[in-house]
Image 1 (cartoon, rainbow, N blue to C red):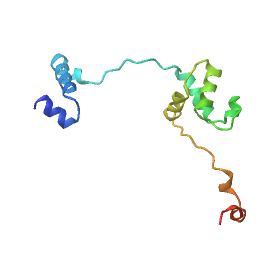
Image 2 (cartoon, helix red, strand yellow):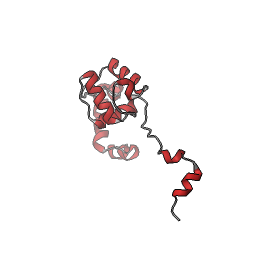
Image 3 (cartoon, rainbow, N blue to C red):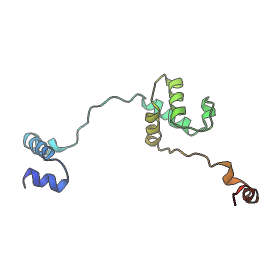
Image 4 (tube, rainbow, N blue to C red):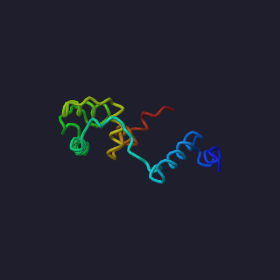
Length: 124
């Protein structure tokens, strides 16, 4: 098959297929293996990540924060205070998912209110 045919079959660009062919010709099958990709090193080390995960299982108040729920802003402030590492709120939100947590907000009190009292507040 030609490079354009392979690219169409795999949904990749022709240039990517050409690079695969070149790597295969130079290095054989070893050239097609996924290699480590360079990138910025993580800001938090493994021990710090474990501590963050442990603290997320507790309330923010147990971690010395003055709020009741963990969110990106609170986690960013905690990490800055505890480790001296500045992470943006968006990065902290990614950290929640990376550690297996998800944001859950409490339901408003009206959801747990007495149904008879709720009827009094409904519009006609």
